[in-house]
Length: 244
Image (cartoon, rainbow, N blue to C red; front, top):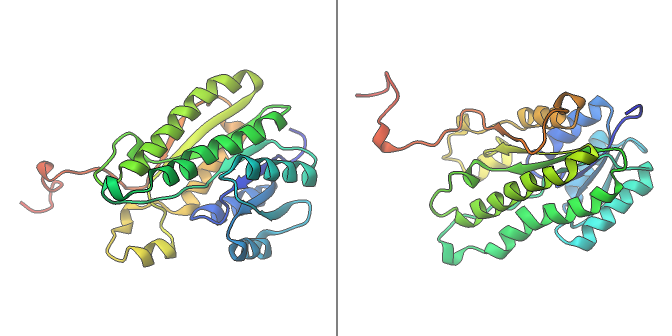
């Protein structure tokens, strides 16, 4: 593209939103940052906002109507739309009978469908679609079934979608990440080992790759960005040199 791409960033107020917005803005992309947290959006606008370059818009994209409103707004402000980075997500752990499965599916899966359906008709010259998955979609753990199922639905749908849209020059791919190392996460989980988390900056670099020509050969890819995270079992014993 001769002009800087126009990207819609949904869930910009989430754990990796600031890092992604900052890196794409630095690259020169034109961005509409959306989210429901108006205070956080205002912070992002103070940090990165430039009229006609990086703008913000408060909206709920978990509904088809909200998604369509946001896509229309991006097109109205920038004249076109070239892609979507969908960072909306919701997490809940607990026994299955106490988990809000409908909420997890609505936020983690259906919001992606709504946002994509709003964006796709506006990608006249190809484009980039980036989603966020979890390793739990492939290896679900106890008390995380609702979240794992929602992310599994998202990734299966994305891989199917990639075949539908690739002949139009649209690349649909996903980042598969574990917990982001943020101040909020550390406060909420003071006993967690954040050496196994991933930093938002590392995630942002992969998003920048997936929204660039460097990823032209990728359709339906699941790109793991998980730092030092790994599944373990007591049956394996300690690593070599660690204990008996």
